[in-house]
Image (cartoon, rainbow, N blue to C red; front, side, top):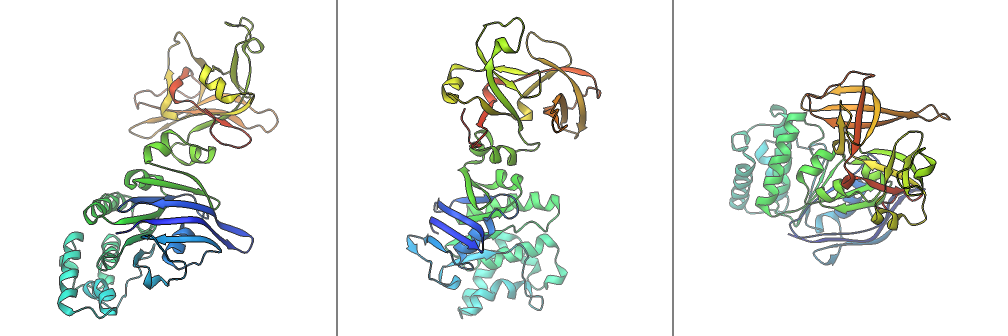
Length: 378
């Protein structure tokens, strides 16, 4: 298989920068997922690696060889498209065998390699069928088989499961990850589905507006987001993000515990948080921040505790295995926007709308971002 390296890769379409000065290394046999919303540049990056788009600046290396000027056929990669692109007049066998027939491989070798691939994908019984007699999942397997039979240096997959139903997608991503391990294949997989990314990737490359936002393992990008965009994009429900200001506790409470001790006051609410010495040292002179906390890191109760805050329930979403509780904290008087916190709770915890509850935050799971740069600071 192969290592893939991008150096200062840039691609423009008129005034739109689809890929903005990207640097990236993908290791041999690694499964990397490009993740981001529509229009973020992930498919353009994939197509540039494949040779289907020519970068305006920068270099692409596959196995240490610069491939900018090589045609797609000479890069020894296999591309699996969002739409299966099977030949409707050919059988499954002939669709899978097509790349080998195109290079005039010996008939015995074609038969053997198609047999092996069909066995791996568990489609031996379908080899005589035509695409019109296959389900969506079966057609996807045939498309994968056509890529696998070539034994390329790398597999590039552009949202290959977006046309499948939810249950089949779960089954297919498990199967695809198993196949990738079995083949030891360097794989780049493009998706906008964070569930696919978290469950399949060795590393996730998160993109936004052509720029690389963060690279890391699924655990890293979820638990340690480096930007506000990543914090919002990863997780369902998304991370709570509320503007805040560092000020003295004396300005907020008539009977402050420690006088002028600085705290973070959440804007348009009665909620404030003590800041640790480590947080204060990283914040420095900044006072306008964005506070972040994931819904699962909220602590809620129907009874008052020794600490915490009291607020009414705005909405309850019962999702079966969990409940999502929207807590009303206040309202922006200028825009009329509500300030809400979302908490993920056990399904047995189901307060009524309007009922007061008590809540607090897991202090170890608080994220602070610079409001101007939207970069993490603590």
